[in-house]
View 1 (tube, one colour):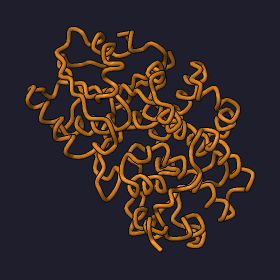
View 2 (view 1 turned 180 degrees about the vertical axis):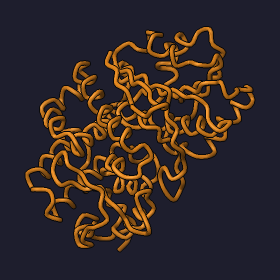
View 3 (view 1 turned 120 degrees about the horizontal axis):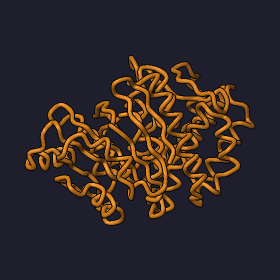
View 4 (view 1 turned 60 degrees about the vertical axis):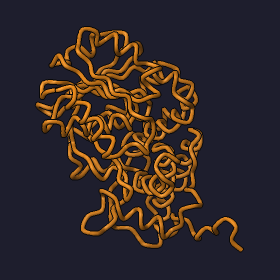
Length: 365
């Protein structure tokens, strides 16, 4: 097992990474401060891995909530259903919520923990690669709105993050590839050595070789923990973690939540950001090609869906948490391992990055 710490003073917490952690009470037990627990999972994860977590929690009164599976259920209505169950169970401020699933479960459950009686403890037990390297770390919680992704939420740090890589064995290949997009992101924004390592070992990562998986998750989490410790509430540097996300969120929202997985959209968004960076003269062609090649080797698309034209892209990108004073800010690349957040970009560079034409409707002349 590898352990690293997210250093946030009184809100600091450990991230434990290893194989078989859902069979070992030691990483989890110290963080269960109250006796009464609520587990929020979903209808896919619970049948696959729920028995192991139930065994770890034996002896605690547990309210278990299984949500329907999918991004389209990441809504205020779902949060309300969780809060209702918690109130019916008479859970108090000493209770602990455990988020047991992928990024959607973690975001929803974390938001419920943040607002139930103005905040209760919660623990992240992420079961997908994307949630293990990204959404379970850093305290961002929330839900989607039809007009924009992750626009409603709160910062609420977990007590601990427990990552058992064995859960990845049941992950569909598409979900695994989506998670690799977020791993690649860390190399692109601040760790060129990690990026080079991924170029050498991407096939072994996709094959889930344990040593490679643990190292990739550890380096990803270490990168995110460093950024979060420096900028917990995204007032500056933390926005770098959104490389590819402004383009990607536009794809997710424009296509309808769940049609493109988050990591799939981010992978395409990173390729778009690399091309725009090259168009601005910031990123040299060789670096842009390396970025695109690794994204493609992960099985991710390099170009956005034809269903979203440039005008729709601009409309969707305008509803983004990085917009300030009406100005769109993007995360772009100066080099592999060197990202910047900027509102200073030529309009023609963005225009060249977005789809060039409006698609023709099916059946049109």
